[in-house]
Image (cartoon, rainbow, N blue to C red; front, side):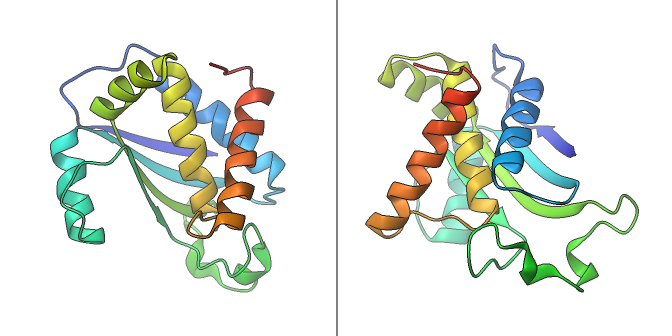
Length: 164
């Protein structure tokens, strides 16, 4: 598994975000029975840049905590049969499945950790777990979808011992 991290924010995270991202991604991929080595691009940015991207791609002119850009058009979450026989979802050099891109706002990590009364480690891990599930086709637009996704996020963090 490769997590390509681009750190674009001036404000530094006071956590080992590389280790956390790898740990969270590995656990999500294992629990979602991903049969492939994967790669994910993670951009750690600030409120200004995530607002710009949020405006451009979602027409929401406000900063958000995390954005996910899945590469695979899963019809059913984590149903990998959708890519069978289609090499276009794989990096030709590494043979890794390209799941997509994630953007996390450092400013939101700090603000939400304070707001919810937990660590920046827990907030970052929550946001990355949330985004990994999006990359695997999960969503939370409908109440039943949200319940499934929220349960998976909570279970992943609990399994990893990253609690409030």
